[in-house]
Image 1 (cartoon, helix red, strand yellow):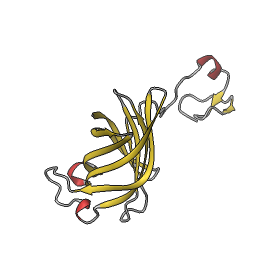
Image 2 (cartoon, one colour; image 1 turned 45 degrees about the vertical axis):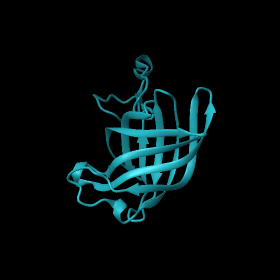
Image 3 (cartoon, helix red, strand yellow; image 1 turned 120 degrees about the vertical axis):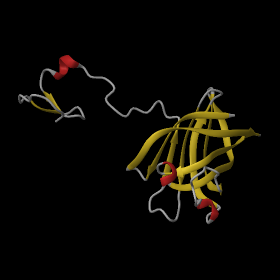
Image 4 (cartoon, rainbow, N blue to C red; image 1 turned 180 degrees about the vertical axis):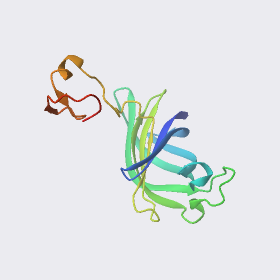
Length: 168
């Protein structure tokens, strides 16, 4: 099965690269799955670090409600990618790396977090795929309540000072 969705790549918890459309391949066999992410590049285009094809095998699954869930720690296998313009693939010197993976899937969607621990990089590389349920901004603003004072972005009332505009 193939799933194409937005993928965000982060170095540790700080720097995130812009979301990009990516395909992850999922194979099911006897309550275990294999996930494959082809031509993974950490960074932007041919300027990034070519990691290669990442394969996560024998990840146990269980069915909860209508979703199959999974969570595992282990080793990801790396093989050289084939994207034109990438002269070096990390897979050529590092055929496997420690990883953790967690997520769930249905027939229509896959949501997965993969953490890769590359010894050459001080912080883990975090791959987030298919996360449409994560809120990254303000979900709801109640205007009548806001008119009674000045509020900070986290919802704290900061006073009633007359401020012309902006976020305080």
